[in-house]
Length: 154
Image (cartoon, rainbow, N blue to C red):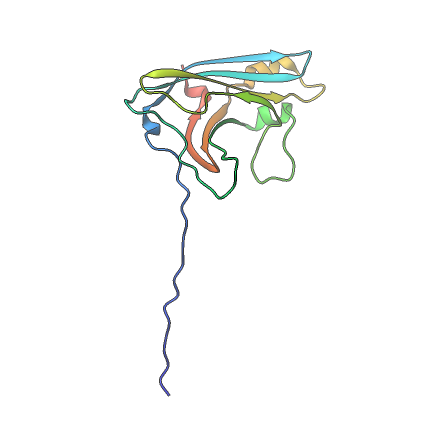
């Protein structure tokens, strides 16, 4: 009896984010602490220094594509001052709102904002102090396309 060995084939699907992330430059960051609403808001101006638009390449079988999303990943000190998402392996602040055009036009700046819930009883001065001790993640669907440590942005 002859044994036939069948090769085992693994199919890996790699999700990749949009191209040309090296052309993105954060040109302005503004943080605002709204004490009345316990809200930390980040306003970003991000320039696409390239000659092509940068837009989401994410595709999936559903009806509502995620597209480009900006999120701020806090360091430990900031995370201790913020309401955090539960039941996730990722360190995520509780999102209140966000806004953007959803893509980056060539040779121009795009404006984005994100805001997060500050914990009740948190020291607002500490929130403001540690707001930039975090990392901006630019997501294309579920993939991280770019990371910018905010404390390094001038």
